[in-house]
Image (cartoon, rainbow, N blue to C red; front, side):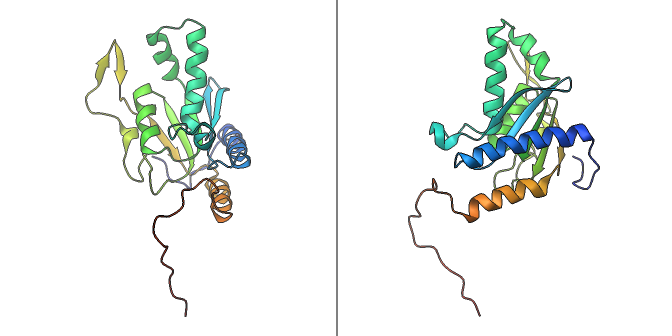
Length: 191
């Protein structure tokens, strides 16, 4: 995994800017502001944003939304499982926040080539913050001839301050969709 201080190409920054636009759409929809784009051969082929509240489905993270767009499109075009796996193995995913454990596991199983992300996810990160699912399995499992859990390259820290700022603004205003606490919050004394 590259360090956050690395210099990033203009293309990398442009793709992350598009992911940030998706995050802003999520923010405007009162969703946790995370967005992503999937790129193949230098072209954006899918995008997604968090839609967990809108859909009332906790698995509808930005990455899963974008992947589903691709899979549906490729299925309509009659691609086989092997053809889909080959196409995914050439894709790069840009997401504003480190993929959570669920998304990192799914991206590993799907065989995405590389993931570029903005800020780390210190509570649920699956690409090094909590677990390192991007490293894949030491032994590849086979399912219908499709490799499972092969892992992917991760590059972090792209436009991280912009991603953090958007998340901070969302949480500072209060998440209107957050469950009410079951017990009183404890407040720290100030001196």
